[in-house]
Amino acid sequence: MADQPSAVTIAYVHSNEVAHSWHMSLLELIGYDMANSGRVIAGGWLAMRCGTDGLPAARNEAVLQFLNTTTAEWLFWIDTDMGFAPDTVERLLQAADPVERPIVGALCFAQREMAPDGNSGYRVKAAPTMYDWAKAGDKQGFLARQTYEPNTLTRCSGTGSAAILIHRSVFEQIRDAYGPVWYNRAPEPEKDAEGIQRMMGEDLSFCLRAGTLELPVYVHTGVKTTHLKSVWLSEADYLDQYLVTQIKDVDPDAGRDAVDDAIIAADPSKCPSCDGARWIKDENWSPEYPEEQRGRLNRNGDYIGLLACHRCNPDGAAVRETPVAV
Ligand SMILES: [Zn+2]
Image 1: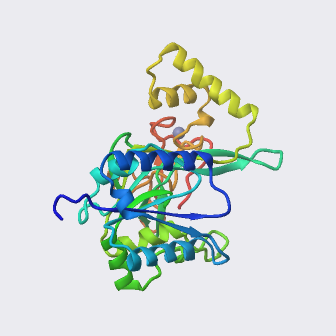
Image 2: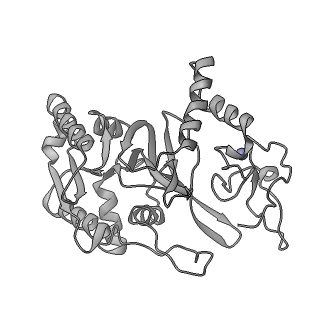
């Protein structure tokens, strides 16, 4: 057994259609696997139709079948609207470890709707699916990371389920602690601004359960994916793109920082770090920040969790918007 490569079961939840990019990516991944380790062929696949009980139930059912009908060591979730490289499973596995790093996701982007576009659509933005568990005063919850270190294995508190490798023991430990409810949606720790108790997504609910059992979550930002989405293209998108093209014409190697700085120089209200607010409220804020960067104190003497944006407001001057407690 020592030389046997550990088997990986592919799992996905589907409707009646899948994306061509997913279909082709999966064919090539299986071809790569057959020419190399054979671990995916050994692990097989679990295709779960999304029924009336929705995504949490379909994911739970797939995990139940994984534990009861396979002996594979790892499960790889891959959503049917993703594109990915043939060696995705191998590269995630190289970064993973059954005990130290039992959950390793690929770099995935969600579509975040930022604002109405004026014509009944929305301005949208690609947002990396990496979340930190943060506490501010008596509030806590998952906060989306705005930026990340490229080509790095990075620990976080939560990520999505679109392309993620998970060790069998994680599912076993969650089942032993909570029952077979791996992906049931958990309540948000705080009510929203309207006082409504909302539920977390099934993916972050899973990460939350893993976190309570001290099972660490990682994302490998060098294992990249694409995600098929619908967008409302507008002149604003064209102008953003045009500006980036201009910068790249001057400096073909301009990295993200150079592009961001040029965008801010042209119009600080477009700052990609803070969306032009010049203060970073919840996103990107972490209790790990040094004291002097942690914003101001509220009436109770608690930090209110606001940072001056380091890109467009380095001195922390109160401009455009007065910071408010989060
Ligand atoms: Zn900014």
